[in-house]
Image (cartoon, rainbow over all chains, first blue to last red; front, side):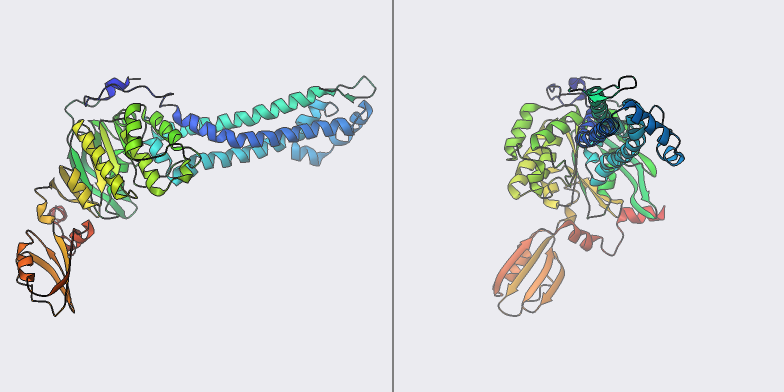
Length: 186
Length: 308
């Protein structure tokens, strides 16, 4: 990247560098804006995962009850069509992933679509991108950076949801063979 | 790559059509290094479209444009490193403060002269701690103006930059452009305020309906200047139709309206002792000039173009 000094031929003194690279400023801006909404949705997703895990642990307290659940839901063709095949749903991890993956993926995809529309097309429509596109970028690069920013927002949602799942999953005591299952204080 | 001798801006047959509407037609223009050029035209003349084409924000239907010898469409990044742009309508991020916005736009441009930025903030009397949503239209305009000026770019592309600015800030703007000119920067100033362009620009290009109808130095274009004069009499007004320099004379009861080209003296002599109660003179707007000079007739360049 050329220095500030090489950019001017008008006799002005060399200018101090600005914070950050002008080629990544757009990605950082979009990522910051996406992260704000991603934090809210991350908490919603996390709460849904925690609710599923806790609900499972409280409702099906024994291994026998869980095996009964697996038998009844495992053969339900309607549920399989809606949220996928029920594998290992007699375990906390199996039930949580069966119950939440499809639902959260769908909601997350809709959020991603809306967020990227708002942060890319919406900003362009509002006229804010004109100032950014007059910088060290092209329309194609700007769109790619914008999408990378939205992806960073998606990463925030995924990280919060995963953390909630791991934390709550670890709080649930595994069942003893043939015996009762219990909560463990974190 | 651009060359040291290449003009700051060069367009060749630049044309942009949106469906059946021609926004810019066969525009050929050259702006030299260190020149301050006014780009005039009424609303919808194609000024903003030209700027969008120069910035590579829109693709031309035909023709090409260059910034310091760099193709505006192919070498966008290299071209943008040498320029800053100030839009006429500042749409900014409402949740950012003025300071954050300047920081962001500084990062976008890749360079900031921080001491000059501080000077500009003071000159334009802007409080940068406020959120953008709390700024008036004029203050938002000041913000984008400061953002464009603070990097001291080689080329300033300004699209009606003073819309919403009060007369004091207009003076600050003129001071800043004069400073840029002294510093050797090139300024491409799109405007429909004739007085602003007259005060700042060495050359003026006039656009009408997407076509360049006039281009030249201000001295060459003096023939366009006409003053609008309105007078109210305490009796029926005298016959002024024979006074040299008077055109577009309209008489309404005890009131007259006319345009004066050249010196005012013949009119003032004719008005002496005729019972003038009020006398008002003002510079006509560009649109009025257009109506007076091109309203029903094609401009010479347009005629030539049509014959081609």
